[in-house]
Length: 288
Image (cartoon, rainbow, N blue to C red; front, side):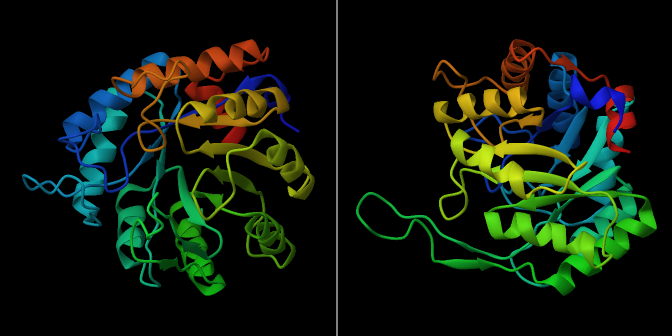
């Protein structure tokens, strides 16, 4: 076990939203905006940036983009703004085709990339009893995971396994058992309506199903209710993530002005748990 791992908390900023309209919410879209928002988070204590790519045409900033040249421009801008920062690329595609994410990983060569570790019925209902969107299957079969891991092996990118339910957490351990991956890095995603709830009691149970010696963090999606779960993550030794991809709300219930305020709140939670904040160099020793 790395001696840094007990007391140091690595802070990740999820810089921009998924299908979030930048005309309504404080989400960056352009490379310059992404770099400025990342710098705000970096100055507040984030050493890792989780990046989604957006189309650059006017009025299309809420639409995902898988053009490798856009990914590379964003990565270069963030690296220039934040010396030593660790980059973590998104890879999520609803269907089986992940040629776009693969092209982006090969272009940008991030230190870390998300690896959605299992399929999920992606659902949400409205108060009137109707679907918030047409029910969809977020497809992540084992062969899709294997394909992505092979590309990450080419680029020296560490997989961060996104786990949306308890069965996916257990499946990640099986990936290690059959030799698909060596070291494990779990991201426990809590708060998706049809996945695991953001519940501190559930979090404590989940740790029984994580392989010993693995790194883990939480991604908590919601409003004020997520912050006590962040606190429990910090208390239990997990690493921490927030940003406008995950929430627009501070612990007080006020809306955030951007990523800097959210990271400041997360740093305060880590320090309250007796954890110190990992610098980019220390985060690299832990993660890479």
